[in-house]
Image 1 (cartoon, rainbow, N blue to C red):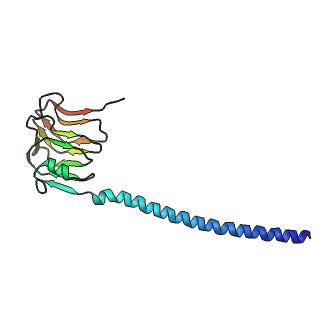
Image 2: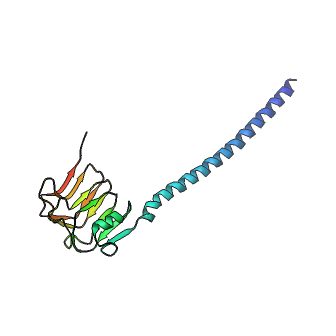
Image 3: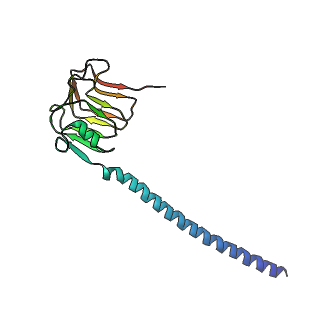
Length: 171
């Protein structure tokens, strides 16, 4: 009788073991499949901003910098060919604004306020000659307020009350 009980217990334990192994291997397969799905989603998300971004060229695609900025989507680059652009540019989306060279790609503000105003995070402004912004406080060649992660480099600013004015409000 003890032997019969031991055999039954051994059979039950073996069945439990086999069932556990079977479930665990299926669970492991599901985990691997889920990891692969998640990995594909991450890779797809990483690729999308690069694949979807485009370059808009001023004046080839749009006659003014502001029109090109307005037409751009987040992540796009607005490339500006050499020339004088009489305008005040306002940037409200995360884009790159890049001039052909910082001596001959000129944003002339016409003595009206800021030449370039940055109103959002993740903006790059590079390679411009910026001149003739307004004379009233805080008129600046490049102005930003309460934004983060902006890049401003290789710009020459002339005849402006403030060259580059960056204001961060701390609470």
